[in-house]
Image (cartoon, rainbow, N blue to C red; front, side, top):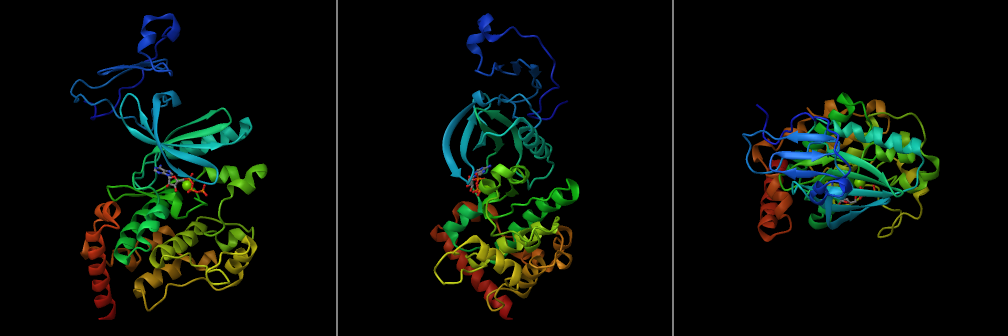
Length: 370
Ligand code: ATP
Ligand code: MG
């Protein structure tokens, strides 16, 4: 018997073109017809198990028959350097997705590379990686259908809460480490662009990593490098100096992201207080030449300070791996608090959540000092 929501294997059919049949009026632009348990399009017929409820089958990342025409735009949820992200709804299943559109005119070989990179997370088996369902190239834009994360990014969330208390950070970090472990050890991929806006959250309290692969391909394309290399803020010293770099460069970025979440500000402060960096080269010089940032020992637990230190070692050989950090004492030190990320992400900023925040801070103060 099939699982709920699972689709049967595709049976190939030779359907006449939509405009030659009366069936055409029931089809979407992409030529998909769906009635109860029957799903027909030009790729074939699919039948959903008889034992299932009335709800339409959920779309799986392996379904290669999505088309942009099958989605209704709901709203814009974010804008990045290279593109725009919209919440969209699939017409047949009602399922929500994020549609990321990156405007660019790239040649065939780059498009193939991007498609190849995106296939990696179409087959992702990790709960802490944002699922990529499909990518399209149309009219000079690459469009990517992604799992929709209704809490937005950690960068968005930080704007609401300003900083994240350690117990929540430990729970968030645990999930990010699982995602990084999967990328590094299972998929042998370096993320290359780990930063708060590429860590997405949802109302279930899940934290997932997004946007790997595409940026790497785009950055390696000389004509697009300036637009798509994005920020140097979280880039490891060995990458900045143009040396060899590996998985450990992601661990450097993780350290900076966590420190920023804990303190509420980017760890490399600008030379003049209250001002931004004059230029990116000054920032790069500071990352390469100055000692790495640290968590203030009077404000954070020794375990957290030690975790950050393990991440932001300037020599990657001295830096801990995702695997090693999964058993770092910081990761499980708040387990007894059993924090609920789901309510934290959904209620943050509300008076009740603020009250709970005070309780957590008081608990921390008591435990760190005693
Ligand atoms: P940059 O382009 O510099 O890397 P970015 O990561 O913010 O910056 P995008 O990846 O285009 O740029 O994302 C823009 C915003 O869209 C994110 O900050 C987030 O708020 C939102 N977003 C991206 N992907 C999703 C998603 N899958 N679900 C929900 N919101 C998303
Ligand atoms: Mg992004």
